[in-house]
Length: 353
Image 1 (cartoon, rainbow, N blue to C red):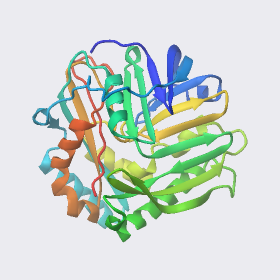
Image 2 (cartoon, rainbow, N blue to C red):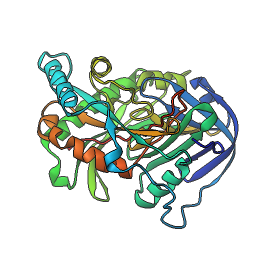
Image 3 (cartoon, rainbow, N blue to C red):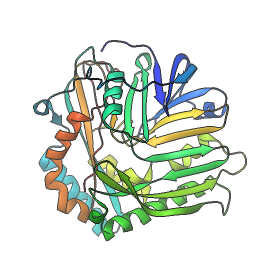
Image 4 (cartoon, rainbow, N blue to C red):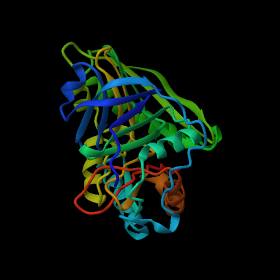
């Protein structure tokens, strides 16, 4: 894949002039503007940039990006393996080992060697007004990510911390079921526990529970969890306590992660991880859950992952997964780092109804 200059775009800002790259989360409490990419599996890349300017929106439809065709995709879990994974998760639920676990698969397809993920970011921005959209392009460091995420993982303002987990999605408010509210409350409790590990005693609150958030063509059920970092705690402590995001793992989190490792056959990478920015000078930062996230991995192929909640939600919708994943992946691609082989990946998360 052709090399392009390092770049980050977040929150209406465009950052250029790469200064340094580190994997140490403690750097986020130093100085400067940082772009952050955290893989679901735990690896972290932080890139500090020198020049930060307002980012102009694409003037036109930005059609330079051309993703793979629908018939070019292959999958890490075919229909039989995917449904077997769902049955396995349901068996864990029946055994009382977990309440919920999220299952993902990875799709792969050819990617043009000259593809530029900024063109993909422009195309997404023209079509999708995602509240936590972003781009990180670090070709020499094996990190290239475009995200059109609707979900807030962590926002920090000084000592204040906020998370906005999403559980429950429908075309209209009437599509949201009692099950969706129950799952949202369950994940809110998980996020409260995560933040409670690093926040001052008694400071964790839930000011908004199960609020309907409207987007073009769909609605989300969103809650807000807030807290105050305890004295002496910083970004390293916060990420250690809260990562990976609870809404894309399951509950209890450690049990769900063990099942995910056993059932899934390909790493998720930045999909379901964290993507965002930190302004260390101001003590502010915002990381989104890596949903609708694209990751080129080298020069010839693409991949996409689809997430599904287990239990009764999967039972009624798993038959629709292959068709929906193909259609959404073709329009919302992804991209990521260099591998020894000639392949490129795109990771796109799609929640089932």
